[in-house]
Length: 274
Image 1: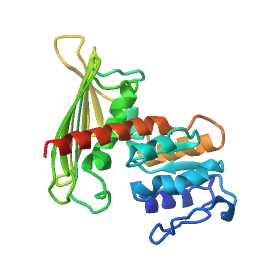
Image 2 (image 1 turned 180 degrees about the horizontal axis):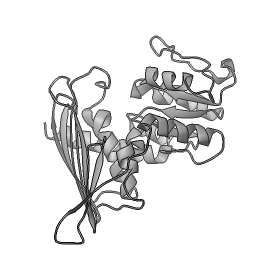
Image 3 (image 1 turned 90 degrees about the vertical axis):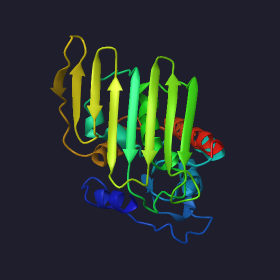
Image 4 (image 1 turned 180 degrees about the vertical axis):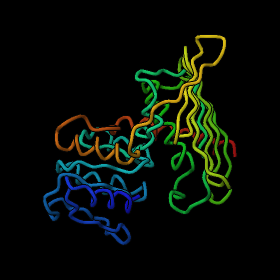
């Protein structure tokens, strides 16, 4: 992800890429804001447990930060970072063209997400809930107004690591029921999302989207129009606009912390059943 961010920034004529720093071997005291050149923003794409160590000194000096998901891997680090206002977390699915095609103000009554991929060492330092499911937990919180769940159950198994590599969760939030599945040991990748509101049903594979009206006896299918550009383009556009003072920071820290806390709770519930 760091390489992808760097390529996109380097190719943007409105931005100047000053440095790319490889996190391998970075000493514990890095970064010291006083030793860095003048910066408007930093993108942090390092293992999640290092996010607070790297971001906090920069944020304290007023440098805006775009941090890869999850925001952090402990409640203490989440609490420490969640009050910074010049911080965004790279929850890309909010900027997925298929998600952006959904009607504004959609409030789902039913939310079903399935996210599968083959095993990769990248991200395996955390359970699959923090690695993959956190994307869909962020969407769930975003679409339901970040209300606390009244019920959360989860079950999961280790396969390739000592942590949880496959997990399923059932979450109830007032009038919304959510069913989420994530696996990083699948032979076939899949990212699907199904939403049911009071008057419509939506089916997304996060590359395309279809809507169905439920106001009549027959499902009336309608293809949703997708924006040009991909999710990282839209995220960068929103983040750097906020850095310039032209809008709010997307995916603010307190919302990203909400999703990460849910992911930690899912992992804890799954581990308790092992």
